[in-house]
Length: 135
Image (cartoon, rainbow, N blue to C red):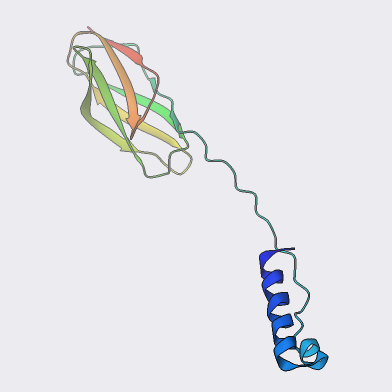
């Protein structure tokens, strides 16, 4: 028996006892309860980012594009580019937002010659590391 039905029955019985008759109890009896629809809540998707550069190698300061997909991240959320420098991830001044379909696209330029380890981040979520070589 659900909680609401128990409260209604207890209230009805108390009114009947205090009112002194069955007529009072009959007048206060509750209408049959309607079944409550239950909604299944989907578990929240784990946040994840993918990232793919348009090229593997560029000249210094040559523009290239990074595209990817965000799952479990709301549309309009910011996505930024990070570069590994001396063993630490450093945020670069390049970013964009996730669109309604969860995709994003970003233009970037790199000046540090050699193999650059990069990743995309949104909050605490980071993509897999990818490399672009600057020659």
